[in-house]
Length: 145
Length: 145
DNA sequence: CTTGGTGCAAATCGTTTGCACCGTC
DNA sequence: GACGGTGCAAACGATTTGCACCAAG
Image (cartoon, rainbow over all chains, first blue to last red; front, side, top):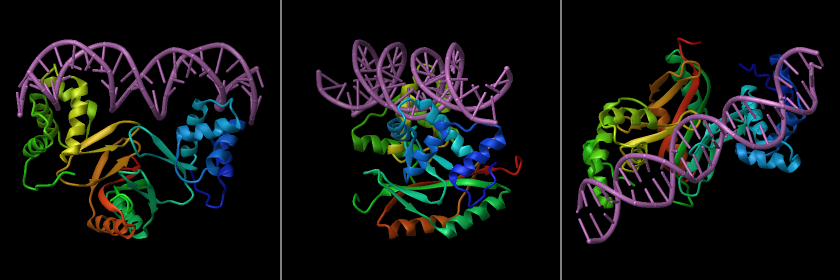
């Protein structure tokens, strides 16, 4: 899915996706997207809902949940589940992986080209077409160990 | 936590852990552990519950959930959340990572020493003490692409 | 004016918890 | 005996869904 047009902004990308799929552009989706892009870093569905609520109290939680799923389909966001049943979303702009402190829940981001490359290679060796991945390291951060 | 005694079997390891923590050895825990070790590969809490139920219908789901958490603490099992709110457990014997097919949900295991090594190094560079990790590749398997 | 979107509340679903009773240590 | 474990059912919390109404194409 999702043909990536590197230079297109999230908004354009969403519009394109909506148009292609015969879906509709709505105020809610635009507002939710704006709010989402505004919040840097990782974001829980519910955190985003609270932010959106501030700007427009009429928007319901279900709409935010639905929008977030849509963003993932449109390739604007990625979803991952860190802890028990909480889905964390983040913008797809720069890919990075995470180190999570088991004690203070701090999140440190990292990226490593060599790992990325090896992933591709391993996938290829198994005839697997790699779409996305998650790579989380759990342990204790410098402050907590 | 959990001092690893490589040669000890899961049962011994559990007993040791229970003894150290002043917890009790019960029939249920033993049966659940046996069933768990019997099932190779990945296992949902609920799948395990169903298996256990076959052998001993009186055991409740809560007991299985509680046992599984205990196994993780004891270092016998590892937990990860693949899809929405479903926790998947697996025996800790051999570490490996996963490729998950987005279409047929197939799980292919892989391991790569170089990636393991780089992880350690990256963690170290950030003063992070690595305890465990998860590395999942999502995409389409050879049969589904 | 047709079809998808929204808001609300009710429904799900996996998992957790409170409690009375039972089994280890 | 004392204290942890178990089973059951009720409680939970994040997410989903049914439905009547609204709005974009």
